[in-house]
Amino acid sequence: MNVRQSLFYALLQRYFTFILQFISNIIISRLLLPEEIGVFSLSLAALSIIQVMREFGISRYLIQEKHLSDDIIRTAFGLMIVISLSFALGVFAARDVIAEFYNRPELSDIILVLLINFFILPFGQPAYALLSRDMEFRKTLYIGMASVTVHSVVGVGCAFYGFSSMSLAYASVAGTLVTSVLSLAMYPAHVKLRPSLKEWRRILSYGIFATLSSIVGTAGGSSAEIVMGKVLTFTAVGLYSRANGLITVFQVQLIQTLSRVAFSGFAKLIREGEKIEGKYLRALSYITGFLWPIYVVLGFAAEALIVFLFGEVWADSAPVARILCLNGMVVGCYAMLVSVYNAHGAVRRQLANESIVQTIRILLVIFCAPYGLAAVAWAQVASSVLNGILLYHMIRPLFAVRLREFLRALWRSAVVAAITLAATAAAYGVLAQIPHAHLTTLIVSAIVGLASWIFGIWLTGHVIGPEIVLWLRKGAAALQYRRTTLK
Image 1 (cartoon, rainbow, N blue to C red):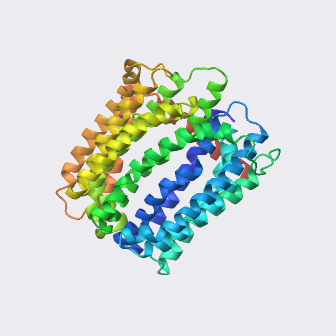
Image 2: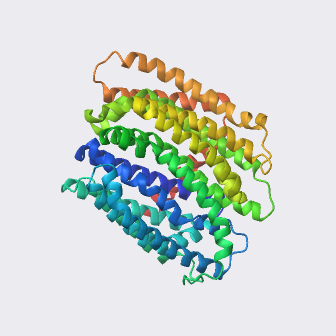
Image 3: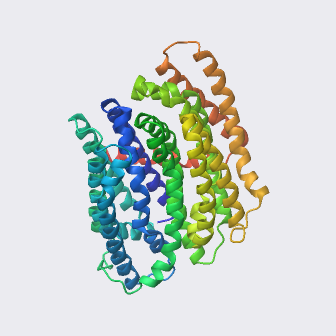
C-alpha cells in the first residue's frame, strides 16, 4: 500500500472517529454536568502518565526497527505484559490516596475501572503496531471504526441510565477491548505472539528514552487538569476539558493521522537510506493549509458552536477555546517533527527537548492556575511556541531543513489563513449584532470560511489544491462505478 492510499484510509478512520465521537460528546455533554466530566477528565489525566510508562515506547520500536525478528516481536509482547501488570498493581494500591488528595471518593472507582485497560492492551497493542509497520491501514480502519462505535454506544447508554462519570470509564474499557480483539484477529498470520524476554535489553535500551520523553510530554499535557483539580474546581476542569477537546479534536484528526502515516513512511525511507526533508515540508504545507483556516473560523464561532452543541451551561468555556485556537495554529507548525524524531530513532534528543519544554509548561500552569482558565490557556500558547523553537533547533543535525525552506512551505498557508481571517471577521462583525443567533452564526461562518479558503487556495496556488481535486475526482469515479454496478 503506497503513502497516498495509506493516508486515505487513515483519514477515513480519523474522520469516522471524529464524527461519531463528536455526536456522542454532544449527547453526553447534555446528560452530564461540567463537574461530572471534570472528575473523569482528572482521572484520565492522572492515569495518562502511567499509561505512557506502561507502553514503554514498545509500539514505536516495533514500527521503526530495521531488522525485526520473531524474537523481538515476542519479547515486545512479553515486556508489555510484565510492565502493564506491574503498573496496574501500583495504581490499584494508590487509587484511594489519589481520591483522598482531591477529596473526591468517586475517583477511586473510576480509576479502578480504567485499570482494566492495563490488562487488555498488552494483548492487542503489539499486533496493532505490526499492522501500522506494514502500512495495513485498511485493516486499522475497520478496527478503529468498530472500536469508536462501541465506545460511543456504551458511553451514551451509561450516561442516559445515570452512571455519571463512570459512563466514560466503561466506554473506554469497551473500546479498548474491541481494538485488542480485532487487532489480534487481523495481525500477520505468520507472526506468533508468544511472550518472551529474550531480547529485553535491546528493546529497553530504546524504550527507556522513548518512555521518559513521552512521560515528560504527557505530564506537561495533563498538567492543566491535574493542577486545576486541586487549585480551582472540578467544574473548571470540566469547562477547560470541553474547550480543549473541541479545539484539539481538529488537530488530532488531521495531525495525528498524517503523523501516523508519516512515521511509518519516514521510517521506511530512512531504513532504505533515502531523504525525507522534501516529503516533510510538503506534509507541513498540507497540515497548515487545512488547519490554520479551520482554527480562524473556529475562533470566531467558538461561543456559538459550544452553546449550540452543548448548551448554555458550557458557555464559559468559549473564551478558553479561542485562546486554544491560537495554540493549535502554533502546534500545527511543528507537530510533524515528532514523527521525524521517532523515525530517526532520535529519542535522546526528543527527551532533552521535552524535559525543558514540559518543565516550563508545568511551572507556567502552576503559576497561572490561580488566575483562572484563560491564564492557563495562555500558558499553553507560550509553552507551544518554545516547544516549536527547540524542536527545530535540536533536530538540525539529522534533518537538513533551513529556516528559508520552512518559511517557503508556510507562506501560502499564512496567506490563505489571512484571507479567511479577513472574510470571517467581516461576517462576524455583522452577526455579533444579532442576539442569540448561534445557528445563524455557525452557518454563515462555515460558508464564508469555506468560500474564502477555496479562494485563498486558488489565489496562492497552494499545493493542497491539486490533492483536493484528485480526491474529488476519485470520489466521483467511485460513486459513478457504484451506480453503474447497481444498475
